[in-house]
Amino acid sequence: MNETMKKIFSRRMLSMLLVGYASGLPLLLIGSTLQAWMTDEGVDLTAIGMVSLIGFPYVIKPLWAPFLDRYKLPFLSRRKGWMLLFQVLTILCILGLSFTNPKANIYMTCSWAFLIALFSSSQDIVIDAYRREICPDEELGFASSLYVTGYRLAMLVSGAFALYLADHIPWQNVFMWLAVFMAPSIIFTLVSPAEDKHIPIPANLKEAIVGPLAEFFNRRGAFIMLAFILLYKVGDSMASNMTTPFILDLGYSKTDIATVAKTFGMIATIIGGLFGGTLMLKMNMKVSLIFFGILQAVSTLGFSILAQLPVSFVNLASVIAFENLASGMGTAAYAAYMGSITNKQFTATQYALLTALMGVPRVILSSPTGYMAKTMGWEMFFVFCTLVAVPGMLLLFLVFKLEKPAQKAAV
Image (cartoon, rainbow, N blue to C red; front, side, top):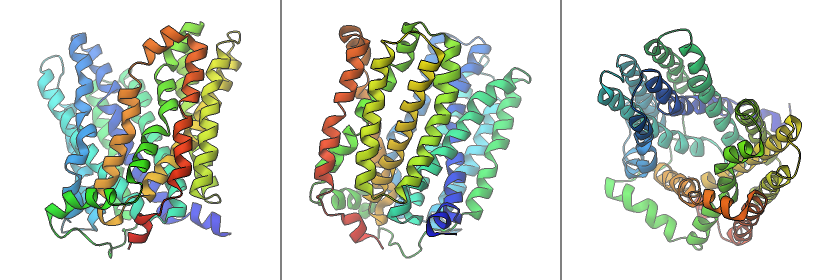
């Protein structure tokens, strides 16, 4: 077995797939699946729409990340101890949610769901730090792709499979089963390798809060790195925000979207992530980000071409497959880069801040895309989304002229 195959089938890579599953399962559980339950129970539509606010802890998680960097529980390693605690708490809260009735007491249902979001987002902080600390830089791409694969497989369990179960058993029982499906995460954590115990821990809470910011912003070109993180996937995010209304507007059915854009598209994204991660074992970070970034931009242009083609399942499948494949590859490189620039002493806090910044294009910069598509027309809108990726690609050349202090500081 050559070195590449040894890396692919190593214990730490298997652990990335498993902890990705643990991280991904709660997301749809408190999102679309919970909304489907409320809809079936006849809950007011306005209240159902407000359920999205339950996920607010995922947005503000950098606030308590320093606490998780600073303190270690008296069992397991620093990262594995917190992972285990948050997984147990998440499972208990899912069980608590299963005993509620959103029609009778929506506040109780939402309270349990909020706690799930709180503990799950906290688990994400620790898992992101754990991934960085057990993998050398050259393996971060493949590790990230396996993590995302496990994450998306778990979303199929808490999304599509949960809805299937709901057609056959009461909703309360569905959520009990989801607690059961979450339970193996405890085993995954126990059997996963521990991170390096020699990584220094912040001496106090003040250092854990101030240290990550001071260390990062004292680097040469810190703002260039942040601008790159902000812009690298902005075109992809803007295009993705309007994909569903675009496909419907072309004359495709909701069944076409469910079959191609959701199921087939997710499979293509998983394959793209795994393929991109595998390539990154052979390619350096700079080449991967450039190559995958170009593919990502070109794939966005495919939607502009689709707008000119006749309505055809094959045409839709081809464009969606290419776009999701390229997006998966780009995400693998993107996540690996963010991991590579974190200082291992402050991994949880710095990674939480970077991932919060990563969400800006999806949440804020994508908000005017409906107006843009209406004004520009579909073809020019997707051409614009392709061109808006160019600044991020240009910044990449500046980024890799910078020294990598995270590597230098890593222990």
